[in-house]
Image (cartoon, rainbow, N blue to C red; front, side):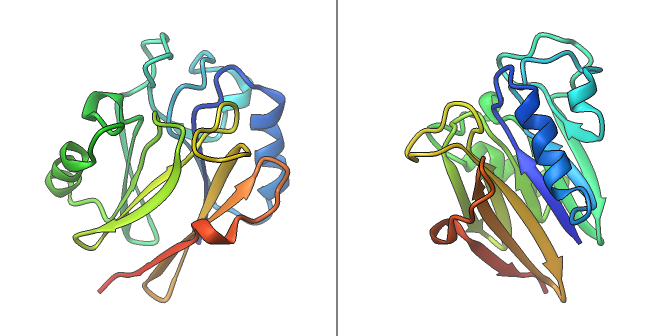
Length: 170
């Protein structure tokens, strides 16, 4: 099972579509962690599990989305309501309450993956305004034989191996 994860596209439309098209034969689902700055029902957002970011003003966006993929509980939020720029602690508390194994978030525009208390926290970075990275990023989560691996890519589709992270779930 593979899931494409992106965030903080801040009004980009062609690029959001390009990601879907590039990986449509490879992934089972798409996640957008907020700040698309597009209406909830915009054609570009079709097919994405999506949440509200601090720059999304369409009230149809949920603040938190939950899904299960290959028996893995996944939690999606933008992160601005949980102070992710300074600490993941509030997000860790939410993940524990929801019993999520994977947490996808954005807001900081920093591409990173962390394993904390057996949970995988994924920030895909930003495809528009990256921070602490010379290039815009997104990622793909794969899950097979209880191993979850997140691989990062530039907007152009080139892999960024130094950001890869894996965790084995028991």
